Length: 412
Image (cartoon, rainbow, N blue to C red; front, side, top):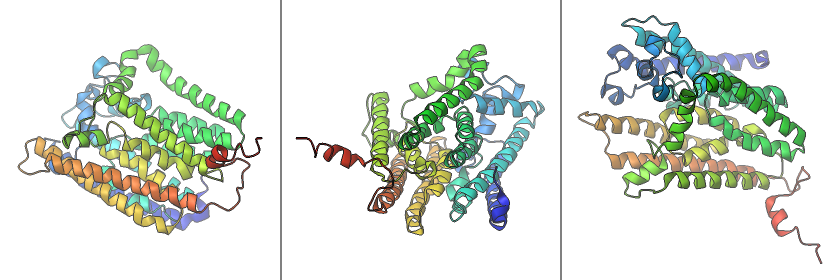
């Protein structure tokens, strides 16, 4: 496990920073907590949360099982839905139920955030403070239940890089069963194990992940299949939504037709670019080195970008940092994320009937700026790793360029 005594002073500092961030985030959300989460107030004050919205919207206020609602079932993977339902059972069905449900869940989320910061501190102590100092992280902390999936993802990365593959596979499966994003990390995991010539370990890792994921999901699949499928159905049928590149382009009168095909092609292009980058590396990277690039790249072309998605990206960005020269790009990206966070709520406030707000054109520009800033930060990470390659590879595998252009040099 995590032997925190090795850097106890740093642990204390990180815990205090994380606690301060959690409290500051609570202050941000407390306005809506005290005023009953009414519209457009929730957007004007940027204190909307799915926790209060779905408590009534998905029957949790009457302790309904998360996936028994059919087309009104919880729209999240099984572990998230189970947590939402289980915490509702601890809340009495009275007039203060929503507030009590919110308080219980954000208390647990705050604990998860503190633990996540500590894990990041153990993985990248010199930059771990950046996570609790991120303005967008603070602003988004209590929007949704994402931290339940994030903490297991970060632990899976930690144990993978420590070569404790079985435990990592179990944790990544739990994370995928909580929020689906970590499934994308199976690509760099497969590459790293292939690059190490650990094909048997790769098969075992994928098999373990699949087995654990199925063990978690099968009871729900067999008992409430319609409710279980709702999450996947919604994502397959979703059109361009808030925060996405495609939504921004549609506002700017550049609508994208056949969006599903375009997003699939974009996803394949991003993953192909990631593989080319991996193959260009002369040394086998750690999972911590490359996870951010994969997930951030995919989110740049996804159908939706919810404000809380930043909670997934910042921990991965922190553990991907190599030196202080990259911090400028990191903070440029963070500034763009903070601006976007303000922009989305002010745009929704205007649509919700508020007297003031951000027009559609301004919101579209905020989307584009966020994506450009994220792309710039990705480019800085990639450029640094390629620039710092040693003159001779420490691995037996050649780079992609060598394979493509030098492979036939000795052929008659």
